[in-house]
Image (cartoon, rainbow, N blue to C red; front, side, top):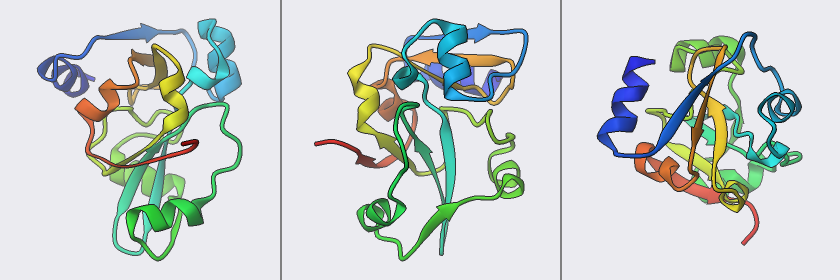
Length: 149
């Protein structure tokens, strides 16, 4: 968590770390616990292509993601969800706790920009990062945006 705080402070972005007693496992649980709209929850998914891994930060109210559409946007032949073991190996975090601050090339859901703040992982199961969506570009290497135009 110290590494994440250092990056956030170096990039001069406003943020808040919210600690909770138990792990939040779903977007619905997060929305209820934090008293926010489900679309403000921002899980970080890890995707695997034929040559590398990507982080995809999505809005919690997004339904099914068309990975074929995203594949074309980033110039890969195929994208699929990384396995829980791969997520742990690549990020150091467990599925459900992957940080919004990532060293992986990042794909961001445009739907998050409807809100002043979004809430996502810190790498620790019992804390949540509150951050403005435009800060995601400052702290990550964003390679694509997807969603409504």
